[in-house]
Length: 491
Ligand code: NI
Image 1 (spheres, protein in one colour):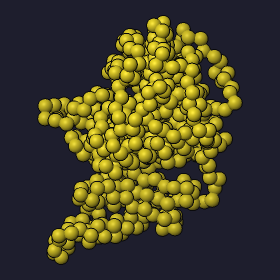
Image 2 (cartoon, helix red, strand yellow):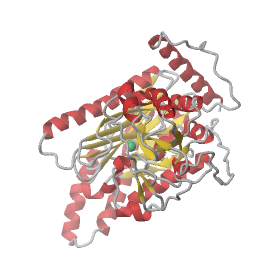
Image 3 (cartoon, rainbow, N blue to C red):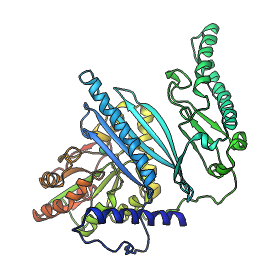
Image 4 (cartoon, rainbow, N blue to C red):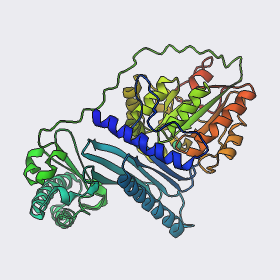
């Protein structure tokens, strides 16, 4: 717990310094004069986002990537470069594919925290890449030694090479078992088909499990030291077997881990990092609103794709102006910026579901769609203690499965200020100020420019007599129905 706070302090110092350099005019509080409230809802690790291409239509090339922002410069530099390299790949493919692309490119990157202690920080990065209809998933592990300020690769952990060789042999045999079972389960094969397939697969396994950092670029572990190795599609088997994962119990590999790094996998019973318990506010929300939108002019402003790095600043602005909004959040991001989400909820904003990791739901199977929705609802409820009952699918893209099986109303918008396209606060403010009575405004709190536009938007809409309210408040006299699609409140 202590280290979490110290990282939070470092983060504050880091950004505090940065702000002082870039915003000379604005008066800054002294670096250590942190506003003291009864609880600190700052997140030590925050989310940076790069979003390119259309956020709201189906037929364009899209890039939606998030990566960690930490208190450590060397980590931030590495993460920035990694994300930029993916962006370059996206841009190159747009050029290469220019006119051929029909469904469009869809590149996404998200991450989760594997471990955060005073000594190490580890992220599992997931990229999903689509050149048309299907997503290809790829994982990467970025593990950092915070004492020596350097990145660790798999060969650093399984050192010397002899140990890495032994580990690779264990993985090879486990992978062979997995694929033998899969091939035996395949229907419509003769014995000789099966033998031939197994032979070619053996060759792929031998190559794909060789002890190199390239082969072992993705791995994660749990609190009991169970290690998972993630192979790319086509790395150890043909594509129809998808992404193969191999799991190793600690007793199978613990003697091969370099002494120095045994603690990484919890092999030595060291002090374990206990997640901050979040106190649930289980009071049933019998919502009563001060404003009756059937009698007074209302507008609901909604923010998608967070929580992320600029969300806290946005919450400050909304608080200062006494305005409530709705946040359609990603489940994956909610798990990383738990405190930010909890703060938004506690300050009276509504939290809605924007899927787990911003995939186009229309490209997914029914079970995958339901997982995207249910896992996100669970992640949000775990943090806020409240149920989620509104959703907005990424890109406003949905099908009958989403409508009929998600069990929530689909909330779209009737004003898109194109804040994902024009990153200019003045332009965004001007467009958002065009909101009409009963309208729903789309915005994205991943963009700094959108957050910076908000004071002007609030001022202008208030001057026109509008109350800025949550979706629940907007529809309080006109209940929302599950499976229905809403762009605004009816008159
Ligand atoms: Ni979105």
